[in-house]
Length: 157
Image (cartoon, rainbow, N blue to C red):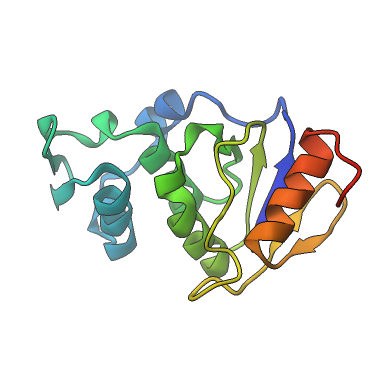
């Protein structure tokens, strides 16, 4: 299950690039789901463990992936990696929900960059837990209202 703490958390890894570049393992790039992350987030193709082909950057090593792709790979491949989702763009949302359906992951969200628009629809029926108060959020609307009530100071929630 995906668990999100709404607000700034000083324990979250914000330097995802540095963390990833010093901890990733080559064999992660053999995994079909990691290849999907690279394709969806960076529109790039994993050719082998040290070769990714980007339409913008050409041939690159894993260290040149975007912060969003790196964060998702770390959440998927490691245990207890904790980051702020401000490093992820909206193109990470579905994959983040996919990972949360495969295993328990925790993240914080200190900005309004993500709204999990597909939560509660199609393939994403598993709720997200708000770590601030333990509420289970089943839909995009519930997610946004909870985020606003905690981070935006509204009385709804």
